[in-house]
Length: 87
Image (tube, rainbow, N blue to C red; front, side, top):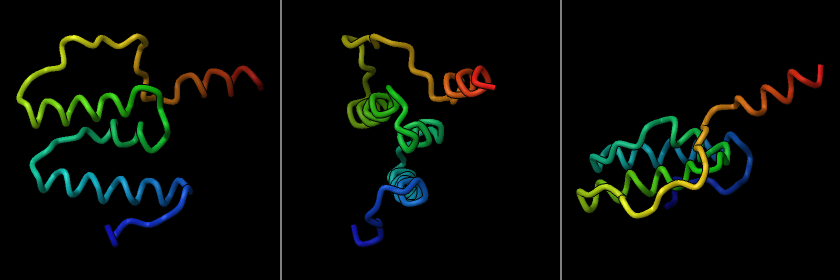
C-alpha cells in the first residue's frame, strides 16, 4: 500500500487506479480500461461493473439475480450535450 498516494485530484486518482490495474493484471484479472476510467471519473455504475468482473473471476459464474436498474454510460455524452446546449 506504500505505492498509493493520498489525495483527491484526478491525477492522483488515475495514478492509483493505474497501479491497481497493473496489480490486477499480474493476478490475471482482466479489468477493461473503460471500467477503470469510469471509476476514476465517478461514473454511475462503474463500480458495479468492477465488482462483476471480480465476481466472475473468483467464482467462475455470472451474476444473474441482480439486474441493473439504469443504463450504465461510461462516456461523457451527457456532459457534452449539456455543455453544447449552453453555447
